[in-house]
Image (cartoon, rainbow, N blue to C red; front, top):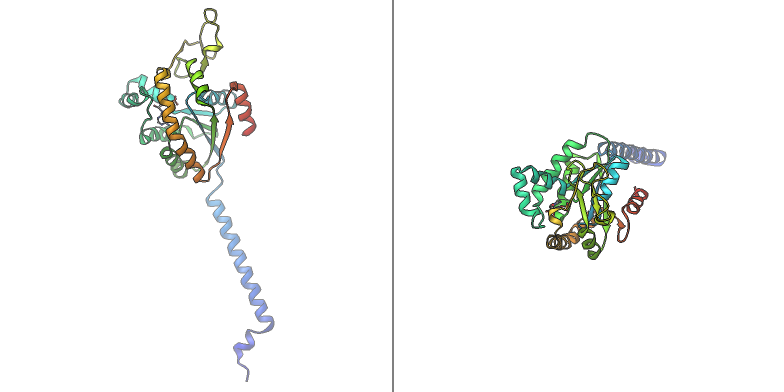
Length: 264
Ligand code: AMP
């Protein structure tokens, strides 16, 4: 006598069962792939983080992007200077670091960035972080911030490459608009001494030299940059985040801007 279960598992029944199982598996896989993609909707807005030595032109490029492309810029250096000039408690603390060319501790600067992002992410504008992150710790905090609070943004990293000698030469002649709202950056080379009035071309305010652009402070800032930048770039490489680069040595700001526009 033939066992009824044996006859069930034979021939066309078995083929039918295998096809049914494969179909069910494919349907299950499609469903979960679809709902997974929906849960992690692709970020549609961009945050650029500009990396580069002091004087590499991060601020100048960021201002061109604000004026001509409608981006938003957060310069953590400007944020520090703004707090310092207002004489707030935070400002007093920040000055202890900035006046020496030292970095402000990661937690303080990151919470300032968090606060700024909370107030500036309600529109569709692309954001430029100019001078943040500067350490691997800040980079880790930034990734956490985006993941937990601003998941609608994707992070792109741009490094502006330049030699130390070119930086020292640039900073020696750097002038900055005294208006906090403007903050445009110039170089003494753009003005003929005794003929041109060094006023801001955007808002006509007087131009000033930054307190921390004194040579000894610049050297300290470059030393700090050299100490922290390798760990910062290694962090992004290990996190699988591509670092896009522009070589800015010997380039005018409009050439750097053109290179940036081609990249985006
Ligand atoms: P900057 O205008 O970007 O050259 O910054 C001027 C100074 O502000 C720096 O030398 C630091 O003292 C402080 N600062 C600005 N951004 C940061 C940052 N991301 N981390 C720590 N300190 C910062």
